Image (cartoon, rainbow, N blue to C red; front, top):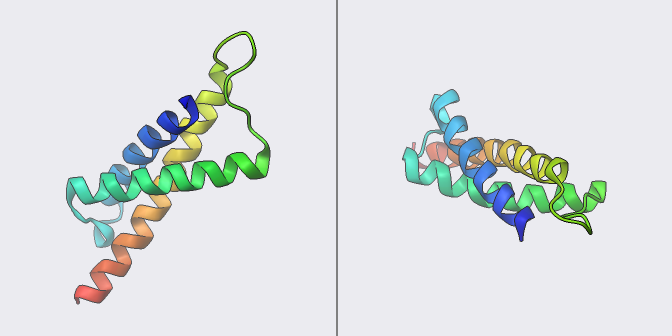
Length: 93
């Protein structure tokens, strides 16, 4: 559960940043956050599966794994937001 929360928050932050950095992909604050959050969870899960990253350690929370999920979700959220934003801008004209 901690994985998903980290990926969701990281993706939302990454999506918001992506909308501000790449002006041609900005979909407004809510659109950027939603696209980033979805991308963060999806990309974070994909990355976790490929790298075999675990969630919490047996004795408690693993801060390193949580940080990796947060950063991985943020990067995936940024990428998804930029791609989706550019496609939507292209379709709208």
